[in-house]
Amino acid sequence: MMLTPRHTWIALVVGVSSLIAGTPARSRTAWRLVWHDEFDGRALDARRWVRETGGDGWGNGELEFYTDRSENAHTSDGSLIMEARRERFGNRDYTSARLKTQGLGAWWYGRIEARIQIPRGQGLWPAFWMLAENCEQVGWPGCGEIDIMENIGREPNRVHGTVHGPGYSGAQGVTSTYQLSAGSFADSFHVYAVEWESDAIRWYVDDTLYRTVTPKDLPGRWVYDHPFFIILNVAVGGYWPGTPDSTTVFPQTMRVDYVRVYERTGG
Image (cartoon, rainbow, N blue to C red; front, top):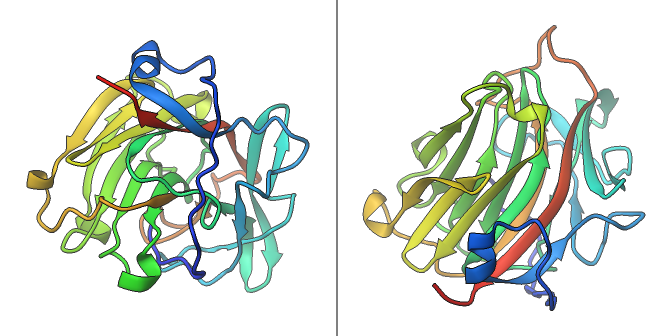
């Protein structure tokens, strides 16, 4: 995912005081929980998430209109439900949701993770990612972008982790792929995470490390030494995933069990 956010803001980190069950033991010993949303409330928490709206393609040729409606994003049975629909809205033939913590939470290093069951189908493009808070000032990709998880529907058993920065953006982003040996990511929940430090970013699926990037691995500057905010979205169409076809069934749902942010406490 990409694109510079539209609104200026001041980051606010919301503190919490306790660890939550379900985090891998290795991580519990090294990280302290500082922010989370378990989506247990009756409605999406507006103190944590902004509903971003628009149907301009987002620089990627996307086909959806992101709405602020509960039909496209709501909570149910302890999960966030993000739904992509085939319906005319505004100037688009699809609707979906794009949520961000911009203005409400931003972090400088840490372990950022979410437990997600992604949607399926040609033309679907779910993502869990981060964008630098200074993007409006310095522009994209100079601000930096960390894609924790992306999937395109025609690759049901693959997810991608990527960084975009000056000299390595778009199709030239520094990326790696994690592939299941059997089944599809849409079949069940998986935990997607990065551990982001001053000199390294590490990508995990279900606590399995599959890529580490350091400054020397990049063809351009390391631009990951300032606060980033979190984005969750389900795009429909775009240059990378392509257009939905006759095999794509709507509506499609991304379920998010939780999003958690940790800061390092030790080795």
